[in-house]
Image (cartoon, rainbow, N blue to C red; front, side, top):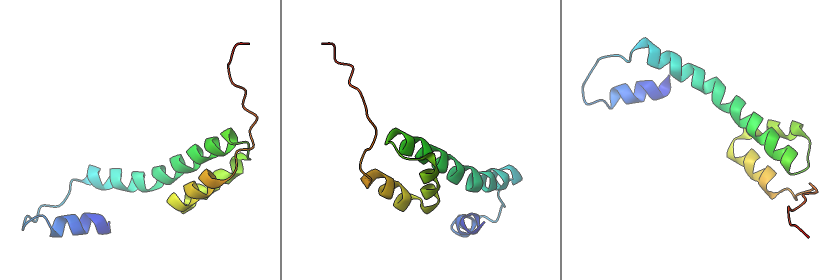
Length: 83
């Protein structure tokens, strides 16, 4: 809501409010974004050989991603190299 208020103040004197669907979409994205980040980091943790529970680090946003990124890879990947 604060972002919408700032955008309306900086709109150059236009006092028209945002349509209701913009407000609804903004509220939905506030909740859907972090959920998708947690799910994505869960898959990333699984790919690195860790528990999917480490996906909860997604609640820390970029810091959580960096923590997972710098964890050593424990997965036993096999290359598809023909002998």
